[in-house]
Length: 83
Figure (tube, rainbow, N blue to C red):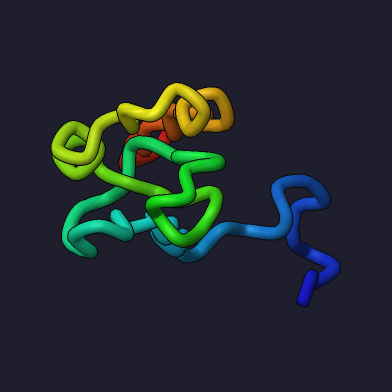
């Protein structure tokens, strides 16, 4: 609560910043995802977050019709700390 003697600006004070929840790769479930794959029927969900090694092993499908509906979106990189 704001007390009458407290300064009028600078509230609310930030006491704790909760770290963000990073999406883990749906392929290996170990590392944060760096790609969001949209429209790939092989993955089972769309969009599907994947790490770089999992997407590199899987690669684009060889079927020309399947490639047309796939969109690979890079996820923003998380930077820890204050800005």
